[in-house]
Length: 297
Image 1 (cartoon, rainbow, N blue to C red):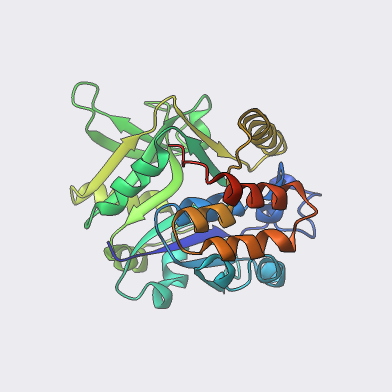
Image 2 (cartoon, rainbow, N blue to C red):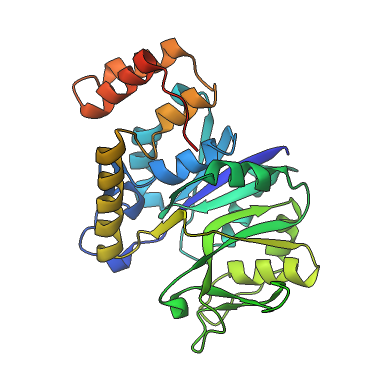
């Protein structure tokens, strides 16, 4: 479907103070890459080439210095500032002009996905022309998340509850959302919650009420990491390090994603690699061309 991407990388990252006093959370390292490389690569692996990054005004220059306009990866990156953290659903109001009449994939800038067949799952979700597609993932601390209540016999979604005190299930809504263009109208009708935020859960409930919500459960072969605390940030880095050192593959490389998806040519990749040839990251990119390694699911 004709679709654009949004990465929500705003907020103040107060749970990671003092690390985030001068630096955006989404620019923190997760092993060998800035955090935002991971959600960016997820969108690129959906085949998305037009991406809006929503960030805190104080960090706009840092994001632009890191990512530029995306041309080096064969994509187009635009930027928009979120003056104050007024909820995830505000992304659709801020991104209205960018989205125009297109469908959208929204991903949170501190969410990291990796796993067997995950790209096939993404592309299948991308084929849905109407409605919303969410991904559910089992968690050990459900009161921290938006939780999906399923009918035990049919697996039909009954309700979505934001940060429930007594959770009815342990399936959390991950920070990756596929929506048709109606999401803009739904966002415009929202009223702020008790937390004074425009809640993404209210958007999802609107789709649920309209019988237009698809929920896919991510199984044990897929990892979802939310890197919003000191421990989870450290755990994510260790996870990436372990996999990369074991397999000799990179996770969350926009250069590789651009090349594999044919957004850029072999020569483009070589040029990007040569610019950072003294790092192991640059050496890895050069070896991709030499080996022409098959893409793994």
